[in-house]
Each structure stands twice: as C-alpha cells, then as structure tokens.
Image (cartoon, helix red, strand yellow):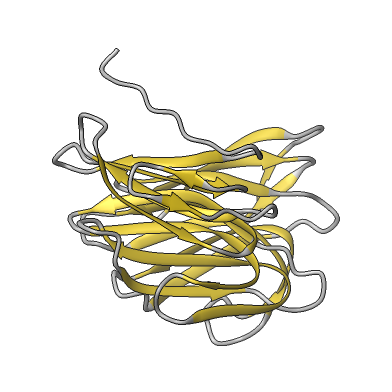
Length: 239
C-alpha cells in the first residue's frame, strides 16, 4: 500500500471517476450530499448531489478541490491531457462551473467541462439536452493525442447535440466529439425504442471503443447484437 484517503459526510457521498496525469498527479470526481473536507476546506454538499472535483499529488497530498451545486449532479467521467482536465456528467436545473450558469428546462442534461489541471480553474463548459422527460447523462470522456475530445453516455429527449438540428433520443447511446476548445466535430447515436441503452466506458487509440449495456437486441449501423437482459456490448468506431 502506498497511501489511502477517506472523505465523507453523514449522507451518501461517492466518487465515480479518477485520472492520473503524466507527472503522477491524481484527479477525482463524483458527488457529495453533505459537507465534506477533501483537504482544502469544507465543500458544501446538497442532499440531491453536489458535484466535486479534486486533485492530489502522487503521494496523496491535497492540491486543490472544487464543488459545483446542482440538483442531482453527477460527475461521472474524467480525462487529462497536458494541463487540460475534462469532466463529464449530468445535472438537473442549473449549475455553474465558473463560466456562468448552465441551465436546462426539464430532467437532466449532459455536460462537458474543461478545467486547468494546475488549479482547477474553469476554462469552458457546455451542456446539451432539453424537452419534457429529458434525462440525459454523460458517463465517460477521453482525449486523443491530437487533443480531440470524445464523450459517451445516454440521451433522452429531443435536442440538438451540436449538429445543427434537433434529434429524438429515447434512452439512446450517443458519442460526441469536440475539439479542445469545445467546438463541435461530429456525433452519432444508436437508437432502439422502449429500451434502456447506455454507454458507460470509452477509450481512444487508433479508433474509439465504447462499452455499456443493452437490455434487448440492438442494431449498430445495421450490425445486429442479440440481447436478452442487460447484456454487455463493446463497439469500435472510427475517429
């Protein structure tokens, strides 16, 4: 064992994502539901979930920590390249990562935010979603060697994820790519009505690989994957 840290409140707190940079610094994200001190002072949590983002040195020493209040906030995925730290997740209502409030009309929105890895300063943040019964979340993020960003998760509702027109998502798997400044590059999504399809993991190398669950037979661009009860899928896509 090198070291171990523990943090929490009287409520249910959780970490969902971790990343390590080239110098060994550690980055952690998740949600707190009460007051928690990660080493830099108390961060206030809400019962429905306040997103936290924290960094520790390679020996576990606290470097910096931030919290972002939201209704049902989730910090689900982290990626680091150089000094660019990316966080993906979802939130209800409104949230401010440092660049002004992001808002939605109903349900939960996907968000993608970039921070400076040195001190957690906000660089930019975006959200997607909208419409009645919308409940969309980003679950994973990755960055390639050129600095291009990829996120995946589940979309639910009618909204424009960046391509210029509204699309209908019904608990659908989506993949979205942007450049390092958050500018839209491309997206795709895979749909099967009345199914709970969700992508939870993403990695980028020569191509993009996503993984998650499908509860029934699913078609990925005509390729049929049989499913019966929450089956695993692994999917490779061109970058």
